[in-house]
Image (cartoon, rainbow, N blue to C red; front, top):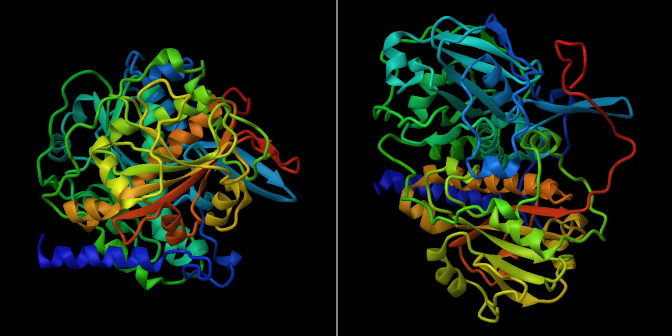
Length: 546
């Protein structure tokens, strides 16, 4: 690691330390919300050619267990299947109304429902789209594509098998202003959570079509920006190039991309980006960490194959993948009484661990860097208390050494399989969970809640500052897995971005920066708000609303 690399690592670590919440100090944010400058959650490209997508295409109801096990026959890539892929991953899922206000929900979760993540697709020529390979922006409000650029044959050939029609790419970008408008300095963290949520949503939607989504993590941030047209946006509403996701639609061996992979011909971009806010607040620390965390050329996140824990479809309740992803909601309150069976609890945790080629964790290329500190409240047959789920065996011993010496590290008696779950301390932890999550009752009134604890220093010291966002992406993947598994078991979940960082570490006996909490989550019986009216996301071509 060069001295410049070390400086960048120090920058992201300083940012992380500066943006911690504590009992007596919150990370710096706006004094109040300027509603007049609230960013538009829907970016459009004025002047770009529009291509409508289907909202009522019928491609069946793939079973959740079959999709997770890779047992769905691959669909042919065409306008209908592409429409379904986006409909099940990044589209609107509903509209909500209450007290004269109206807002949309999406399939992919977002902190504060602010949606900093934008998607750009590199697609082959296709019926009902352009006659050549092209770069498109996805507009979720209308469920349509905006053609940003045509790709020359030279550029298409650089992108593996794009021109053959057996694969395509989704480039994810982030508009940091959308999150910093509300959350101030801590917004960079939440933006990366949302990138992880989107990666998971893409991976799961692909699995429902028999496809496979995986990160192309060889590209540098600057090279990716060239392919996605990020230079066409300007600060403070600029789009930061996050990552390229490769979607393979068949069983063929994919062609490796050249490294570096940069356009061979210049790309003529079409359209002007819409303005999202009339005024802005500049957060220097966010600009600094975003610059430090850019991925350089010559780096790869691949760390070898993750441990294999093949999924067992027989243990999964029957559920429709498409109904799950489109009915996913974030709970705003828990009822404080609904329980979860021990079998359901263990199955949910098993789905937080990589399982062979099962989505969503098959999308990322590194071994698990996050582990779960669990606050168990109401799980039948499992004693209330503090637990630890080790998502990667090589980190278990270091976690034991780092945590409090008073912890028991015992396997729960009700656990019959090899799930790496350990009881640390038995007893009521609902009050502790709520206090640590910024005094939010929802963390203690569900069946269980958890903190995602990253093997922080080792990851950054091994890879560099560019790996910092990827830790949050991994957290987002875990979060989306929990959202959907909660619904499978008749419960609801919600991500918790506000928690007291160092008090969480203290509760586990963790010292220094080696292990850091990056995201919290809670699962339980949701309390519905009778004031809210739910409306369909779109009107279908047949006149119905869906």
